[in-house]
Image 1 (tube, one colour):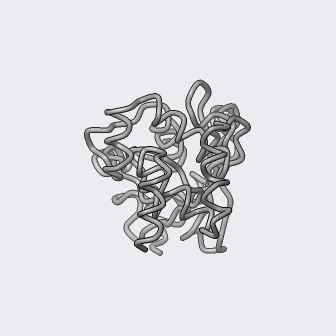
Image 2: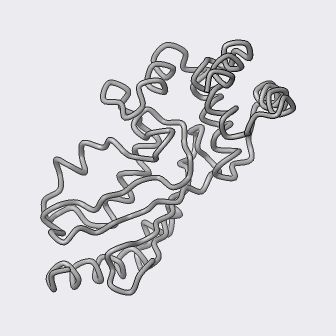
Length: 200
């Protein structure tokens, strides 16, 4: 990595560690390797969202061309959100692309991702199934997102009805992650989720 990029990311890494704003918003960052090319971030689910109480792990890769190109970030923790792939954790966040000028810092990237959890952009989705549910059935979306937050991010709130459906399909011998994905994508209909699971 170019010297300018290393110096800048070191400064920004320290900025995140010392920032009252990131501390207040429960945002953390750690080194994965000693040359600052890969970091591990963690953001807390924002209050008054289905993600509240969850802790979301992020993989952050710093490109050679940083700060002229933004870091590549993806969610390691599974999440049900229109702008984040429920399969890969890839993020569609236009502001990371548009605002990738030198003014964007590691701190602002992490704060932007946390803000995205509170203000989805369903018309520019990364996950079309989630975006469709978000627009067509907002209450089901919230319940599904809460369940994913509970199962994958440690959030305390979950839907007993959805949990029973998961347990029912798991009792048939299906993998729990596959069951959650199938039920989520099939509007929590056990019959169509079972058909999907059997077809794979």
